[in-house]
Length: 208
Image: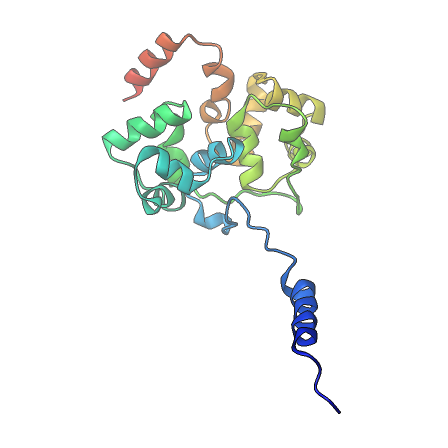
């Protein structure tokens, strides 16, 4: 049997490559670690909502990617100069981004069933409570599921996310107990968004 022309071999391999190798690899912007590996959930939550990769933040701050990873996954604190830079870059005071209670407490929450965060939550309408929305992303929880677990109507919970509405003290407590993060951090966006910049700077100085 005569050998096939060389170009036929090339075309055959081309078809194989397109079928099995040419579909492309979709690289996620954030790796998916186990929840026990995330020590600073608030910092990661803000980055995820703002769609800033750890490597991008490192580049903006002129620090190594390893340093930023250590802040998020190991709960390490940056030096004073880098602390000021990251707070200025992300728009939060250090007691919010690097809260000791958040870093030192267990990051495992007690969800009642498997859940999944829906991307349309942030694509259909802008969010104003970045921290609370980002925590749903970090833990991969749907807004509807979280609202049921803490006993509030889903529409009300969405107002907390999209309008930065401050819930009643009772629901603040319930949300704090669920995420195991202080309510002052969970709803920081509701308070910070209403204060003038001068007051925020004074507030940050007092917390140092």
